[in-house]
Image 1 (tube, helix red, strand yellow):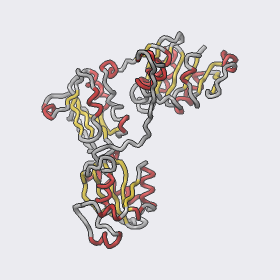
Image 2 (image 1 turned 90 degrees about the horizontal axis):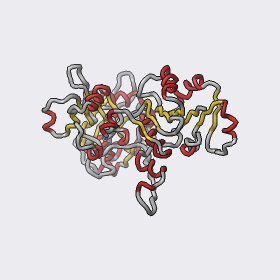
Image 3 (image 1 turned 180 degrees about the vertical axis):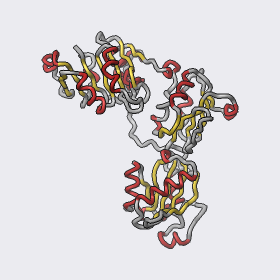
Image 4 (image 1 turned 60 degrees about the vertical axis):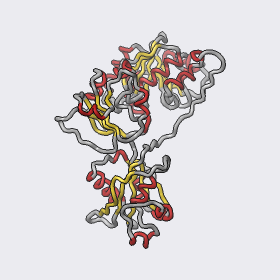
Length: 397
């Protein structure tokens, strides 16, 4: 038990059996929340629903029997890690990729000097899991046969990768023997599966190769609307335009409009429901952007000849200052039986939106060899595993 304590930060929960409760009371670690259980089997269902990761100090067979009735889907099950009671190995048991058990196992192994045991095929090939490939870049996971594509990669069969959006940084760090095909000529070769990385939503027919889709968040939706247009009309406009142009709504980075609409209730509701940022531009800023469909009527009304197209283009270039690509010219949408109207345009940025804060790890090695750096530094450098409010341990006698 003492071996796991250095890993437990503020907010961590450590469950211990009644038989060692007295010993736990003598440990003065105020940052750890202790829980005493009478029956681990009875406590586990609630923990399963509440926590992202569970670490067991039990025999692997016992853990398997405990969690078997609770396993539902790898997309929703928590990460399960087993540390043997002698403190020699850390085993990634379930949720290696999607739940992060592999990263958690590596972090525990580095911290405690254990041997990590990762049995996933991607780890053996030193490849990123295809079902977690886009997570570091904030990509949205689209439709696809993830099991079949993962199996093809594990068998090292040729897999097409067609990427027309998002960061290509991941391609630069693949092992030399990978089976991904990136060249244009590869599209004509016989392949076992396909990976699309694109804002386009491509349906997969039963006769096609198994495929999966990642959608980088590169699409900015420019919107102009009449006052008090309800959110149901705005949502319908987005859905209609995206379906008509085979675009994935999951690829939306945000919504852009004129600053006069910054308080528009319908727009704010759409952004809140979809968890999207709203960027607002002044009429002067919008006037400075060249658009294909300016309107004298709009200019007389709000002081700029374009709202939807200009806002979409401006929002799509905030970082690189490279002019965005207008994918969809302005469309006017009304919904029968509802008040208001929406003008919508879509532009593609050259970089995806990553809507999460980064982490800066400062690793000081001091004098000596690199292998002498502290376990905490090795964890930060090697796994970048978010330990805080993540790790929860069940301790056996």
